[in-house]
Length: 324
Image 1: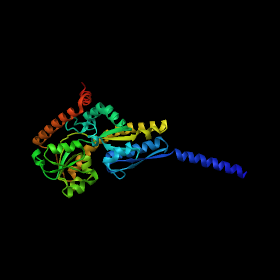
Image 2: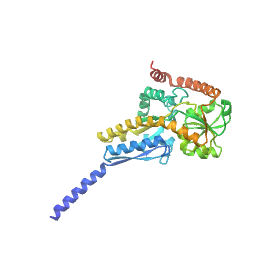
Image 3: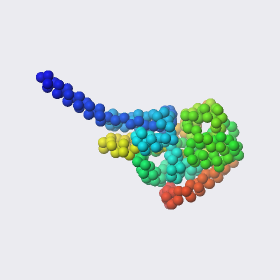
Image 4: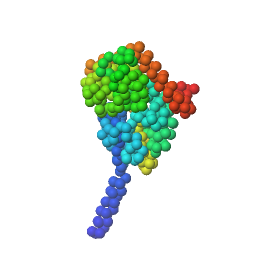
């Protein structure tokens, strides 16, 4: 009898061990604060995956660059240091022009146009990342990028000599063309960078402005709607392929839901956060005609530079975008 009970107990333990072995946790690096809508959307995505797999696949989200710094997330996914992560696409602009397109000023300045641009460029994005053993899960646009400063900016001349926060090759190039001094600063470091005078101006979303409490260190926001850069959520291809088929489907279904939800969140966030800037004392406007005209000229130059660098593949994407 004791032997039988021991066998039963041993069998139960083995069964439990198999169940535990089948459960997996993915560590996910994200660069933005937990309060940001991108991160909130990712947390919902992770919850959806856990529920759909009955806890067999759990995604542990690490916000605000707490696991891996923003600039290193793509390579961390590529090398399987982590299985999954989020980053802004334009961080990779120096690798291939296709990664720069959504941050070329004034190519797509509305949510509808940004969606069309994403659909036109999606296959190329997937192809380039696929070569690095990275699978695209979904992508969500930021709200339109506006100009923040610690002083009035009435014309492009007012930016000359100012230290301008850059977070991608495109924002660095824009700063150069405006006569400003580009300075690399990640979102978590914004308050200190501005209060210490390391930077005086930046081009970013209403979301980032509110998340970083811009009213503590800035005075003006010009809603110039320069472009809508996108974040992308990716997974290591080998890690994805190692999942059972039902878990792969759960991840893809949750990703599709997160993409649709994220775009809606972005649009709603822009309206709400712009009002919060006003309520907290930031002087908000659409910018002067003179300023906007100069920014448009910079956008035209950057667009020409991008088209030349991107070549035929880039032209094909632009044709798809314009419906030609």
